[in-house]
Length: 635
Image (cartoon, rainbow, N blue to C red; front, side):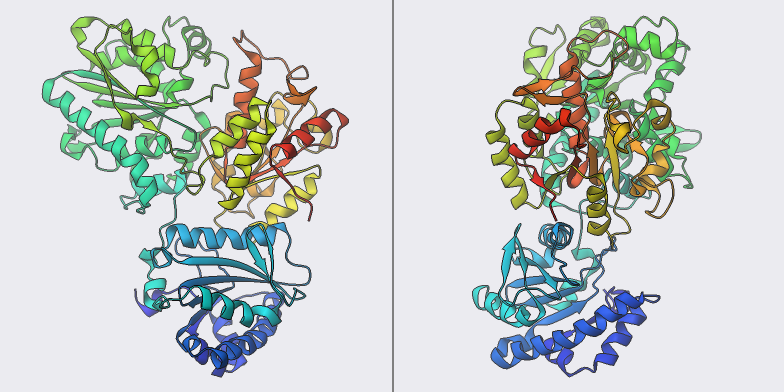
């Protein structure tokens, strides 16, 4: 990496920093961050002087400190967040976030903890080293304090903190060139970021644990596709997994990232992907198409709406899909026949799985239909049958079509009596949560919380999540929740945080959260997720509400979930007695409500702030959430 491409305000060893004039350091920082505010410049002015004093003590008391390096305003590659100060010492990386008076609140602690987590998880130079998050308030204590895994220390205690940890974590400092190599930092991409990389034909970052979860599935499905092409046969593949495990990422890579290039087909004089990616998630389609607009290939080709796909081929029975491999995301939400008829306003007579299998049967020679199946995420009328629709649909196909089914053992009970040849593949179930920065058990915590009977079990999982810097916070003040998120992501231009609420609540509008149908139907999902924080249409404005229908399958860095009255805890159990009515017949209304909150509670990669309105009807709900391990947002 060339020196000119490095993104930092200052970099030197500790002795050079001590010898430099404060004016020279300030000038370098101003050159890097032109247009810095007067408040920022004042902070640098004060910080540089005490930092020189503390570094000088380190060098005088420990000769090894002469080899330590410091960086000021280091910009995380492709991320644009900037930790204030990083010290590369011995076997330790210390991240210092400097704050003003009384600046060690929850947002400050979580901000620096996030820096430390990402460096430890995604920076190859930090592998196998301790990465320590530290908040330095101007009036902080002389002796270090610990809270939420973050050290809190005043400026006069920084040298002692560095000396103490250097004595415990001995080793060679990281070479600056290794740390500043942009390729060394490979953060886990969001769905939108991953889609952009695939769309622009750039490689996805290599995240070892994420790849270990998704690559075996990709390889298995690729092998099935080649087998289908070789033997001229038809195959249904069900890829199952918990929320946030990478199913959508697998689907996008399968279709667009070169896995099937050797099976490319000639269309319009050009070699084209032999696959198409479909989704019944309208907001996901809108967000990806919005993010990918302006490219050489329209975003509407990259990802397509299942409703339009079904309408096109169902109403034109002579039409043959040009692709040989069809990926259908969120296939557990496939519509039954009644819902298909309602959506298309005509009696098409078949479920979505039946339609897709029939369309695929028109494809000459071979085809593979890949259904991506999520757990417990049915939120619409007509989605509750889930995987059973797929078993019924494949069982009804003529034997002459030579279909085979490929599923994970977890789905085995449903397919044991299926008349179609069925193959079991362990890798067709994704069981590791990667959306949440590889923090395990977010899904398990939400499941325990929604079970509603054993808060102690949920609390035990919540404590583990806190150790991994994933936050579930709860407050009765909407303004406190908004202030926390704005402070937490003040320097993170690429971060997205937004306000979520259930569509069936009828209480929130009285407490400043307008989740009415007339308002939420006007939300434009593409701009809401993609626009920068200052844009009036951005989710970061924290004014427009996204419901479960606008957020399922998508992700935010953090979510502000306004808990509604449609699922309340009373008399020791969940109740839906205050839920707004649902049009259509439901098999299990309470389970559908739980599914809605399962979706809403798992949108935030860093965590979720739950706002419980100060209504007496929600007092027990608030107490229950705290009993389950959500931490009160008190400061």
